[in-house]
Length: 223
Ligand code: C5J
Image (cartoon, rainbow, N blue to C red; front, side, top):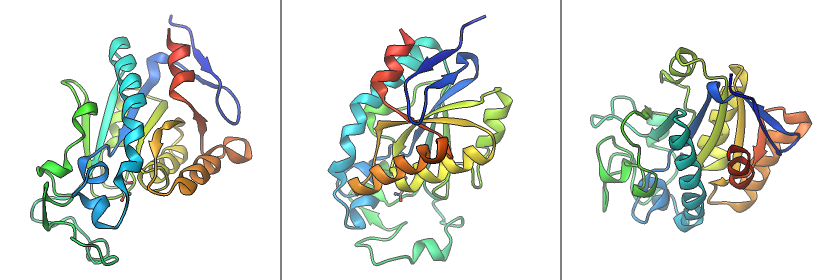
């Protein structure tokens, strides 16, 4: 069969079976990455996330070329907000709250323009799009079922933001027995120091949560 693929990563090389790998694209939504969305309503500089788009698009292209599974997640809520905990709705003092009308429609509400994935990384037919009400991608979703049904054991992880939805998801995946390679340049935070620290937390202690690599190292291993 197909050989295993190994690439340099922290804390040591990452090896995966290409028959059992998936690409996870976490919350590349306009609400986090563009002006007028949820991220900006919390006072963040959303331009800090834009650098992830180009490298992630190259990784997406590679996965599509190989025919390997791609899973996109979106954080958001039902239009009636029935799945929005008051604890989440009322947190902090944002300019606009979840469900309120902004320049890209209702913040973090499924179906609004801002809830959609940035056009550069838009899903194509055949790719899983997974809606989630929380930060983690496993909580209150069928992600684990989808991965197990396809025999996926290894995840290449991209997305925003590193220390929120990416970190929660990778920790949840680790506890379920999945091996995650987080691509440092395909993830970003509104807080560069949190980005760096979250990546360090994944790979420290012998990869206690997972591996950290780069899109270049992955793409070089795929040719
Ligand atoms: C946040 C996310 N940062 N996708 N969501 O609220 O990381």
